Length: 230
Image (cartoon, helix red, strand yellow):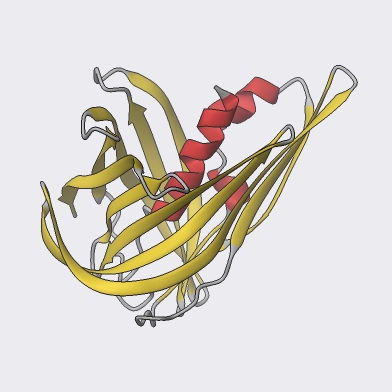
């Protein structure tokens, strides 16, 4: 369950469910009260759950904009599984996510009586995207000490690249998007897995769609924007 939670939130980092003032990031409209609903599907296209995000607070600090995002994760029956709050920063050059603040509280609650340490490199989405552009890698590491043992988990987001421009349609509408490809590599207790993915990013909206694949190229899961209010 822990491993699945970590991969799930890594996908959320990739998705970048973020927002920012129009003069801060041209891809995400930041307004307190704005909400985003995403539906998750399994490899056969069957609904597998949903997430609802809402911007609950926006503040400025110098040239930066800081915002708090509240997330609710529901299973395919509509039952709430967990909630979490995290923060992010928007600079004049784009969006930057703090991995430490986005780590799900439901996961950390499992380790409240243990010693743990979280480190990482922020994920960045710049304003000046162009086809063929390489994006910086990102990663998150978690080290847990329990019962005299140490467990390390590592997730790396590598080979991030703006692949192409493409129009995509979801229940929320039709959007002109940049398609960003990347590979998520996860290492837990000696086991390593690698999942290529693609993210469809629309100006003024943010993430519209995401697909995750096996190394063979077959689809593992997908996420689509199903509702967007601001």
